Image (cartoon, rainbow, N blue to C red; front, side, top):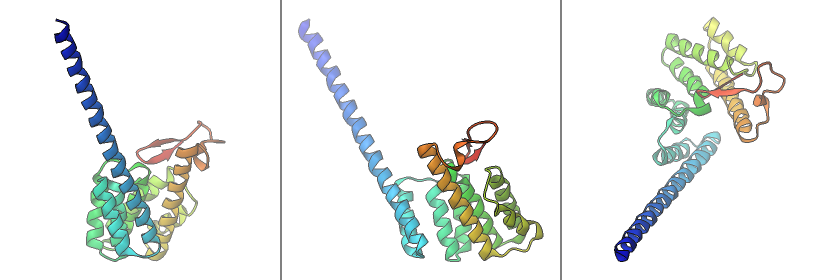
Length: 207
């Protein structure tokens, strides 16, 4: 009887050890995949900033292979936009828009969707730009959003200037959100605003 109980106990321990080993392997694989994703995004952004679009594409594709999601797809759309491959850029940005997990990159998706569509169809592009202005306006933005709204209302779009404004706005927003999430400080710390701290919903910060 004791031998039977002992055998059962040993079997239970072996099962537990096997389970823990499996979990450790999964965690290791997840960690490795995230590191590859983070490296691909970091190197891709650096390449994009210096105008190395082929290098940026390779790194963003590697990031997407490591962790499929809307953020690397958004940056791939930006690469294609910069290379004037508008059909591919539109397909990528629309796919990114339909995916979950935008986080605080939602504004970047809306902004570049507007830029891409404005290259193809003025009416559809202006409509998309309106969605961007509305979303950005709800996050207590830089005042340059008024310049974007002026373009939208008049229909007189300076695409080169608009791209500079949108990139500046979304980059500032992302930087401030990252600081707030990491340290609780910065523009979005909620100090001095009625209603208390800001909250993050659907990738957009409100207060």
